[in-house]
Amino acid sequence: MRATGSGMGCPDWPKCFGLIIPPTCECQLEPGYKEIFLKKRLSKVERMVKTLRAFGMDERANAIESNKQVLEPEAFNAPRAWIEYINRIFGVLSGLFSLLMLILSFRFLKSKTKVFGWTLLGFVLLLINAWLGSIVVATNLLPGIVSIHYLAAFLCIFAFIKAIHVDRNFKSNLDFTKVSKAWVYIYFILSFSVVLLGTYSRELSDILKSEGFIKDYKIESENNKPTLSVDLKYYSGNPVISTFERVSKPGRRIFSSADSLPKINGGLGIAIVSTPKGVMTDIEARKQKVGGEIICKVF
Image (cartoon, rainbow, N blue to C red; front, side, top):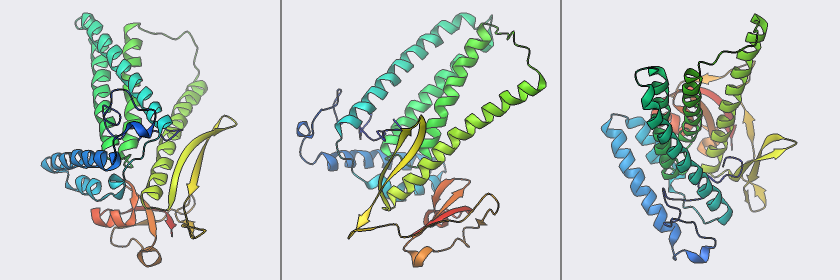
């Protein structure tokens, strides 16, 4: 999904372009389908924004409401639609197997309470992640929500693995020394860091795309290593991005309050800021009155 950029292969949920089975050709869709599904998506976003406001989450609601990416119609692409469709089939199968596992875990309710508890937690996390999946589609891969959706999947898998671990009373025959234990911890920390960096890179790319600086991006595999490939946007033969300047560096971190965030190129460019509320542009950070680390300047 992430490698092919098929997250919006189907602009609606749970169906795909209003069909149970995706079309194979744009000719199978009714005229003006882009506007039709955009209208449906915006209606769903409006309901979500109202719900967020009802729970007092006005800042998050404003961020979704003002994000330009939500207003972009999605064109039909057969390969991406079918990749997304297959992904959803696996999601349904995961849900059915998780439900079966939860039902079977009831026999441990008294004898092995932790087994039932971890299984129940995994099932609840799966339901939450399914809901997050619909939100990801409704908001057109809004940065931040995609990352939460991605990380929630790992938490769900962890809960089910933990349930099996407790049930089998797993004991390792390996004799771990302090040094080897340290390497295991380092491995897990590095693995989690790779996941975070992957979502972080995607959020940066999502912002550049939503702000009109790039056409698209995708994650490719080169020599068994994931590579982020960016399709630059051109105007009159010249790239839209004239300057891409890194600001904050490992040896010199640059932070700024919301009021002190710089206006790039007289407001024609953007600064990308990492805030406690996620990665966003300087314009959005001012609206939400939140500061953070200035990652880069683009104009």
